[in-house]
Length: 123
Picture 1: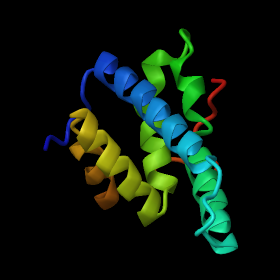
Picture 2: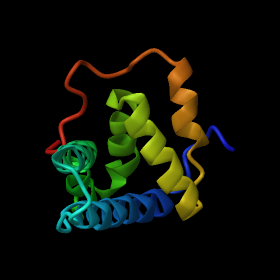
Picture 3: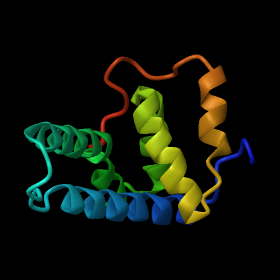
């Protein structure tokens, strides 16, 4: 895997596809419980939905025409603030998409460049 960011267009496409995959997973988590599933299963589903929504909630803003050039910045920020479980989701989905995310893993060895709240999507 490369430690260089892929081209902007590739990152934009990966971002759009990550959102697509998250929406599909959220939809699957909202399907009705079957009779053999416990109330705890519903709580786990709700937690998973919240986790996916939290992971992706800022990403659509980076697909706006005037912000697309900042898609890598958005993905970088999400990577840096994500827990291990969320990063694992990102890894598996980006790998599934054939996106070279080595540059994100290389961030684990760098000092954080952003403040606590990261970049503003509106800038």
